[in-house]
Length: 205
Image 1 (cartoon, rainbow, N blue to C red):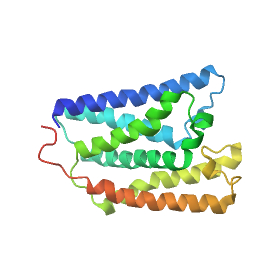
Image 2 (image 1 turned 180 degrees about the vertical axis):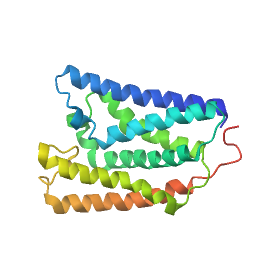
Image 3 (image 1 turned 90 degrees about the vertical axis):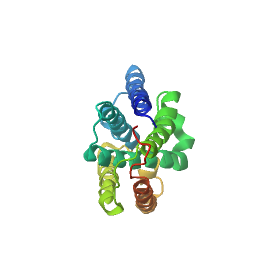
Image 4 (image 1 turned 45 degrees about the horizontal axis):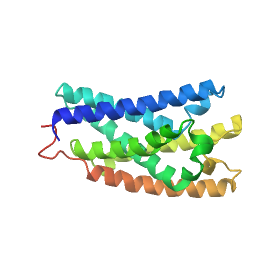
């Protein structure tokens, strides 16, 4: 993919993700339901914020004709988080999307479907230097920390970001099993993402 196309692609989807997040905040605030602690406790929001940063920083680096190993490593982590977001939402949450997870319908499509796909395609089209599976395993620290944070914060504020994290819906055993399955899927996805690292001959020309 030509360099200019990559810059345009990253900027477009970066701004699209940013606009969806801002629209969510504005819509919730207008309804008088704005709670920053809860809003920024959604993995979807956190991962999309990281995606926006990754895309816009990536666009700048390509425009400046620079390559950053740190930025590529960060982009790999973001790719993992966004793919997890898309898969988990599609499998576990799609039936309740209009109830609690998004304030505006088009935001739901952008944050849970379009940006995850866009990030995955960006990783494939603009491949970094090779990243080994072992080196990429630390990417899982963030989802694990998020799980711990959600389970600790949940009973304190009597609120959980997702039903499958709420022990009221089947107990901690069910929460643990769901988390374990997601962790296994996460490890598999780390392997898949790293398999798509490594620059191609046509990258950024």
